Length: 138
Image (cartoon, rainbow, N blue to C red; front, side, top):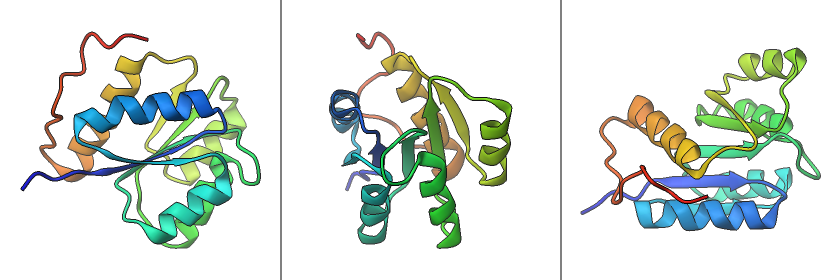
């Protein structure tokens, strides 16, 4: 039986959220989409998630605030923080919260897929996607 890891995508940009979901689903991921930080936490409470891809600037709770809440629940969920600009203060907070990657916007679809797959490999071992990551169209 094939393993289908769960990816949580939290971003207030509906088009980006849905596009990422469409990119990861054919690669064997179950995707959960959240429009704000509170929705991120609600999904995390109800589902086993393997990687979270969270935008820094979301309504209700920022990506960092959502990750802080995840850590308070003692979850070691690998989180990727996404933003167009990371200042030193944000980088320092991300390090304290053990964010595994910072991903700068704009990013290519190939870059985000590669990032998630690297995290899957580091955290869970040999996860082989169903489709290649090279040549994704943006």
